[in-house]
Length: 430
Image 1: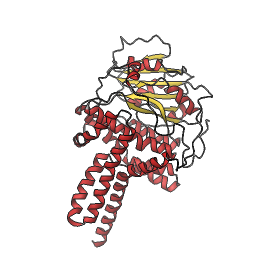
Image 2: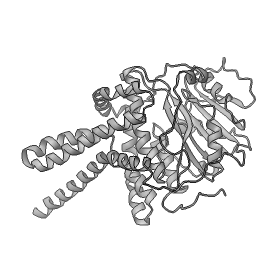
Image 3: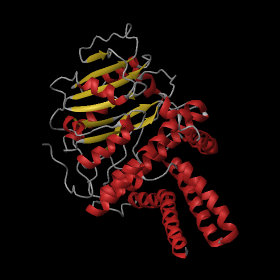
Image 4: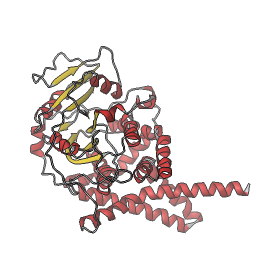
């Protein structure tokens, strides 16, 4: 019995160390970022050049039961400075009678029966691809695409990268819920994309703005876990295992609509939290296989995929601080310090990365986000029984949006960073 309790305490200690590491990671990355800004940390980068081959992009826009947002995103794609692309709009379970686009590069596809999943919509579009389409790009219907998006991507593919994620920025950030959602994007971009890219690691992908060559996409296999949310989680796991590196094009900007009310925020978080638990086993497997194969990219990617949603980390820290206060005050102090460093780091990251300083007001609404995430956690069963969609309402065209934005100056290098692990040079095209 004594051995059992010792083993249990050991496991609990290891678990606590993992939780603490996730909470102090933003602080450590901030230190690295500040060091990099002072040019004391030298990270090898490839010289960026847009010259070379003109890749043909096959762009997929997946719409489900609504078409109001399709004209704006198609308009933004037709305003690209780069002309070599085709657009495939999958109007799943939609009325397309009023969808008419004169440009021959735009095809509106309506499946004969409802598909109800992103993966099936993407596969349906690919079956209609032209032979010239070399690189697949995925967008949501509420996105707007910056005019230079494809031109920037073409430069990255000319450097031999096979999977490149664009930079999702907020399309709207006026109400308190929009500010909350926008702050989350800024924080996650810094932790999971900016800093990983700077250090040469693969980055986490979003469900939209992701691009990959056709051979890379064909290597992906989906399972039933991916049908009700989380297809992007499955996609990135398959890419890391089969392709090797996911790059981040910070200047390939996609504008994404942020949620504007509590109900939609909860719908969104139900999908995200559910996806974490659905793919936790595969995340652990990737982490352990990275250790066995001594692949730093797999280790760091798997480690971050194992990270619980931040609201669970924060609640755990508060709970353990209170419990230890009565029995082990010094451990209570450790957890209190960890929580303080996380809150401090979050505040600094939002304050330094937000171009719109009004967005920093979203920091004060974070307790509201915590409340809605707890509510979402208690409703995870909904994701197994129904299709959860985030409602959209902000119809705006790219020209009007660009007029309202301040110039965006990247805080980190724009060039591709050298991937770590087994890929010490840019992966060449086959």
